[in-house]
Image (tube, rainbow, N blue to C red; front, top):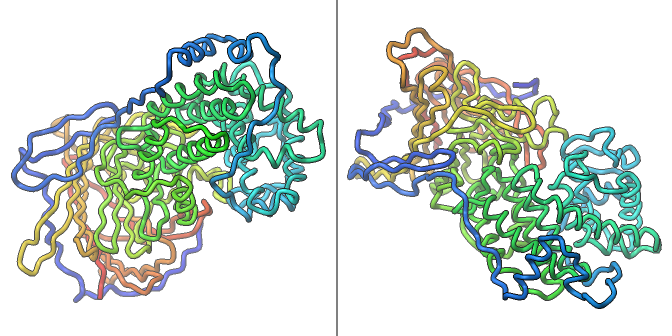
Amino acid sequence: MVDAIASTRPGLLPEDAVETMAIPMAASAAGEEAILVTGEAKAERPRSEAGELIEPGRALALADFAPPSVGAGERLIRMAYRLGVPTAMLTAPFGKSAKPRLLATVTNPLPGSKMAGTALRAGHFLVLGVKTPIAQVDFGGAARLTPPLEKVVHSFAWLADLDAAATREQVTGVAERVLAAWLDANGKPPAKPGKGAAWTLANTGTRLLNWLVFAPLILSGSDKTLRTRALAAMTETARWLDKNVNRAEDQLAEVAGWTGIVAAGLLLPDGKPRRLFGEAGLIHALGELVGDDGGVLSRSPLGQMEAITLIVQLRACYQAVRIDPPEALESILALLMPPLLALTHGDGSLGSWQGGWAVAADDVAALVAASGVRTRPLRDVRQWGYQRVVARAAILQFDAAPPPLQRHARSGCASTLAFELSHAGQRIVVNCGGSAAAGGLMPVRLEQGLRATAAHSTLALDDVNSTAVLINGRIGSGVGEVEVDRRSLGPESAKGSSATRLEASHNGYASRYGLIHRRILILRDDGSELRGEDLLVPTGRKGQRGKVSFAIRFHLGPGIEAGLSEDRQGVGLALPDGSYWQFRAGGEVTIEESIWADGQGRPQPVQQLVLQGLVSRGGGNFAWLLKRMG
């Protein structure tokens, strides 16, 4: 995929250690239950007695959350504020308007990066491994920054890093200098969103929230003029969000906007009407963002973490003014955590899905601790779409749903039927990940390639994506439905081992090539063996002739040394933890270079196993085996 240095240790796969691949993976018999997963709806088939169906996938669907229950008087205030009645008229109709000030000091619930904060004190933004001098940043947006840097700068997420780096007295000067430069470059809000990165709804809502949570860093200095400007900017930003929150670029951005509105209603004077207005909008927006099982509809673990972070920080604002947050907000927070944990591997870090990278275990653990939610990974996998199988020390993650709809995608990836496998915290098979980190150490030129089907551990036809990958993180047509079936298999003999069987198929190549891709994965319950089969099944048109190229890719985890067997149909894998695995296929395997985004979104050279060739338009099947030795 890219030029990379990948060390290999040539080795032979012991022929006497390879089992014959008699894998019971034929397509399910008629009448077996399956679940049809689409972008909008579901369809179920009759239950079969042939096996036990567990944890079926279902359709992506919107969750309904009712706004907080309030009395008649508060409903009237909320309605009047929504219609544009000024706050002062609703809170003190015969009194003077309160002067701009903060009503409470918020205790930050989620520490930032001390390393990034130290870099700020030294005069640099440190984002995804790249240092950018503060003096060289164009805060006005005339010279575009890389997307990751834009987000950090204009959302003021860097305040958390600065707060973690040293005492308040030591960092206040830095915070004030950056704030002053930003205010100088962004005098007045534009008439509507989208006028540069500074005024997207996502950055504006998050910026206001961060200003309020980290107010001591920007309001406690000796510069009274800057303090007055900062308070005025908070008030003006809150009013701008009131008018424009419904013009958000996507659903998560709207949630960020509503979060900023509610925080302002809690911490700025005469804020009750704004808070009531904001709470109703926030709960509704979260209902549009989150599926029934708690997964955000972008299917992105990064989006999931962002939604949790916004709620955690907003809850801290409620605590600061000693007001209980709406019960629905706490319920949604509890709902959001299990899907995120479903994408963790044994070491606590995340799988690489929908633009995300292998977010470090410490970052995930800090978010879980800040949320206060104590729960287990999601088992009943429905809207979230990721099947998770735990077999002792082995964890299998399987993308068994269509990509997100275009209106939900930020870094949409054509990853349907890809999988990741880890054992005892060591990643064995991965996806490249990291498209959302492009612009840090990950080159921007790789962004679209990292979203492609070839960047995931699955099958691709003719080097074509199963779902079209468009610019700006969007996706086009392709996979529209996925059939999913999950079963527990008992041992075939007294000495045999039970296993979990996953079968899924997608129609992403049906219109162009007349072929359905079906993948079957069987993971033994002791975690020592994963058997797989990829089938191409003809559909639609009759009498298809000719052949089409295919490639089945298995991107390897970091630090794995791979060596081909003599017959070139097997590969020995030496893992960093000292264990040894075998990969065996029914055709010739090649070892190629690949790339993987680590826990900080930085590119790391890895290798990939590729099984490729030509297949008839009439279909074909390709079996393979991954087994732990010793």
